[in-house]
Image (cartoon, rainbow, N blue to C red; front, side, top):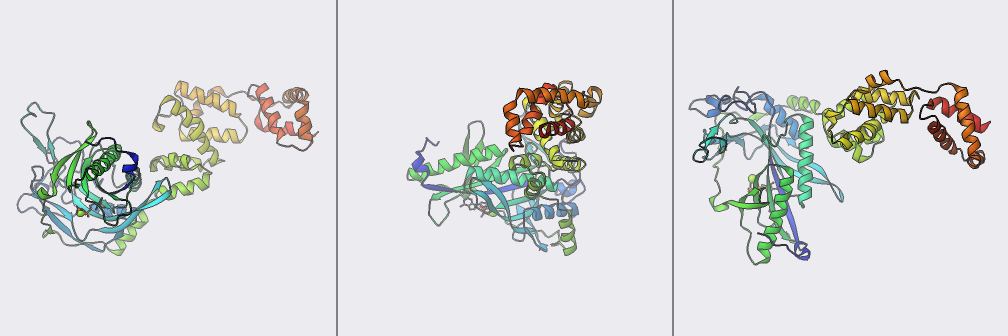
Length: 489
Ligand code: ADP
Ligand code: ZN
Ligand code: MG
């Protein structure tokens, strides 16, 4: 159990981290049979002789799984191998009736990729060693039954679910970098729509490999693998814990053992699971029931054409196109679906930048204040476009817009309905406005002088004052025109 280590002790060491991520692919059927690939079915209902590994049953590769694996590989900048080989990974476990998993070993479908993650020193490239295809095992159910104290049940529905495993290079140096890597990877996978990446349902699972070495040392230290941590925040916490534990072992004269450890979230620590001496020898050998997987040039070109604009590129483009702050671009691109809805709407507006602005500040601000998610917003994208256009055409003032949005949130109604009903009054009568302008001009001789001396930006001051005097009801377009005329005249 690590005691608090002195910062000057911690800072002598450099952590080295590599992540292995398992991702379930969103195919309709399993990797090598026609069973439904579906989470939440009654136990042992989506099974057949192939995924149970009954003698004589033969696997047939699901083309959709290959397409998804290829898309994922391209999205993380991997080279896709033309000819890859399936292999049997042999081990005994109750949730694995076949006695082996079909996986890929020395010739995976893709290698040599990278993703870029933000760090305090700018974007950093984390290498991806490989992406390979494999099938999932079933699930042992240890809890939830009357006799769970003495029995474990098996649900084999998950047997044969198509997975990709994405293995990073040991390029990660801090728990935060690991967190960012996972966040970016998940975002990319969601954009490519190959997985729902739902960690609670186990569609995305992560093992963290951690070692430490003295700063400046050439060789890596002995690594420990922390298995199956079920949230990104726990991955970060588990890595933080491991770094300190290993430094403490070394500082007290010991040696870090190569082993697998399990994260215990309740206690905030890792536990030894099995040491390398007890580790599996999987006795990989080429799967005799499947031919080599050939990814043709046509297939690859087709996959490339299906690749969407990826989050990082999309953020950069949207920052330029809508003049967004990076933080706002990150919000707008947090999901592909949200970014798509925003852009489809914004492009119909007179001024797309204004749509971004209203969405983020006026609507976003109100959502934040109420602790609501974007999906719970009473104001639709179309509503925001209407609001932006009305503002742009000077048909409502920004004060009136704020009042209308307040009503939308109070009554949970969309903007077009509220606008139609309330049709806020606008003073479009020039003589009424001129009277107000005259009053404001008379009350502010110093500002008039400044304006006439050449400080043209002073016009904004008068517009603001008159708008306030009109209780926000002055037609902004007319007001602007009249103020300049009066001041110049
Ligand atoms: P193994 O043979 O135990 O599976 P690999 O070399 O295949 O180990 O690496 C598995 C994962 O561990 C990869 O993500 C890799 O980047 C990471 N890794 C390898 N060596 C180290 C190390 N010394 N410290 C931290 N991570 C490491
Ligand atoms: Zn099956
Ligand atoms: Mg390995």
